[in-house]
Amino acid sequence: MLASILALAALGSLTLELFFVLSLIGLLVIVELTAPFNVTPRWRRRLKWFIALGLVVFGIIVVRRILAILPPGVF
Image (cartoon, rainbow, N blue to C red; front, top):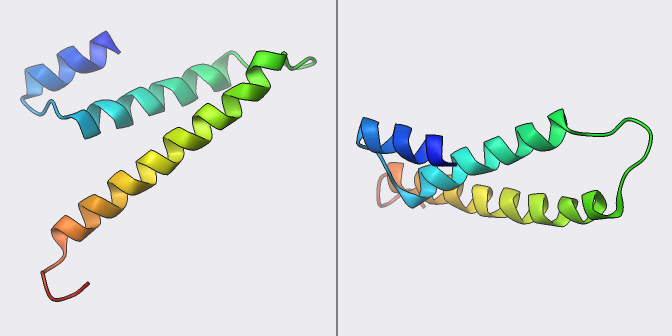
């Protein structure tokens, strides 16, 4: 997360939305890379709800960005 904050700050595009998206992508990559093959721990099953919530927030961010791009009379 610190690397994403530093990279966004260096590029001059540090916003909460971009930070959230980069953090969510990082979480999903780490979850997939550390997935066990045979046994699923109990805490890992609860992680699905956290990921689902993150994907819902991501969807809201995408819809807001699309609505900002569209002309005022379209939607």
